[in-house]
Length: 391
Image 1 (tube, rainbow, N blue to C red):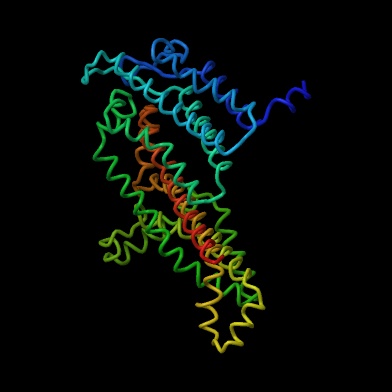
Image 2 (cartoon, one colour):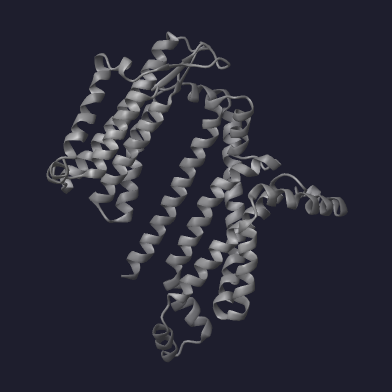
């Protein structure tokens, strides 16, 4: 058996993912249908939908299984990516068509058709197959980002065409589009409101730690202690002092600074951001060799010129990597900030949890995941561009 596996399986990762995809599609409910939002849904298996054009979904699965036994090449890898993309598109289109069929074409129908665990598992595995193929196809970060983006373009077009409008998740969005849009902008506001002061504080602190070993230990110790405090606890610790300040200085309350709301959320998230930022600044500046600095000084540069023209350009990719970590971390932690009235997509998620509405929870969670992926991709692209320009 081992001999056969070693001889015939050329792509074990692909084979494992396809087997998991088949298991998820056959063992979990693909969709869930309920008469209304309040009642629990009845699961619909994928196999029950594989009739007529739905049976075409089996073709990309079988071809992906076949490619796991073929020698990997650029052409085969590209075909694997396209097959995973076709499979993801086909499953989404099938879900949308089924939702329309079950609703009887009545847009006012109270019936709800939701994505089941089988759909989410198969969609995630399809994305993993496409992502693995893209990483094998090219080492270039820019091309990887573009190819990963084009994987979801067909899904976006499918949504724009209205073919998914009868799915419960899209109905939740239609019912709360204004609330969702406001929450999205609030979430972006929290992100940028955290990044700007975090960078303005983290860069000087990192520079101090790099130049002074005496200050490095106490600064990093304090930041480590802050990092170990749970987010809910830190939000709670800020309530009393900020409420006291707002009471003592009414003009602060007039500018939105109080014990609850955006102010404690921004302060807590900035404090959480300082440790990875300071560490990235220290690591970036330490990566500049002493020989390069001596050469710059030998050319007549003063201390400030050496810092801005030599050290910072070399250290910038490492520093941006730290900013990337902070940005992704902030996107996720801003969800928790909704508990203290900061708003954002977390408010939609918690509203869904309180009302036991899974699709409402997903309406808050999915954009957060997509936002984190997009932010991560943007910073990776910037870092790759900087590293390419240095070569």
